[in-house]
Length: 203
Image (cartoon, helix red, strand yellow):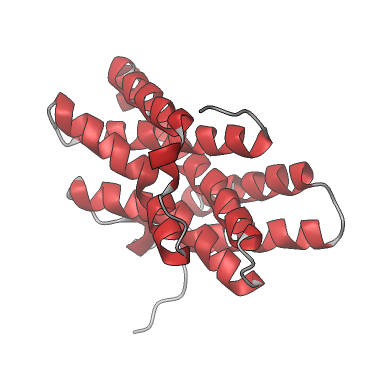
């Protein structure tokens, strides 16, 4: 059954965004149409499935939420039909990946808090939800996962998760916390990529 509320809406947005990024990665790797659908699917549900299994939330979300499946199908079709335009602008892949990261970070933190987890674990669950779908996508597309590259990725998720919790703790509305945290993740990713910022390396 499909239900509509703010949480459901932003979760569907993240699912759609990651499905598009998965479909785009598959098209770049010259997968056939079934391979494109599979990569869109696992990218969209990889992080949330990992999170749900870690906290014992079974059956996992996409098995009971019809909207998740339709969001994946929509993302798959969007990537398939507009792949030529998306392929001409590298920023499209970055945009959809960043949106998915931000939205899933927030939903992961929220689910952790609702499950009674502490702040640290909830932030970690946000990072798992936001990052693991992209890791699976990149591995299946035979590219080095973004999370393991020089640019800041998982750190953006952690900062966004912490910001969400701070805003909620200060008594602001959940809507404000959600929008601010997602915007922060997008901003950090943009700055990191634009200025080629990276975490310190050990020589």
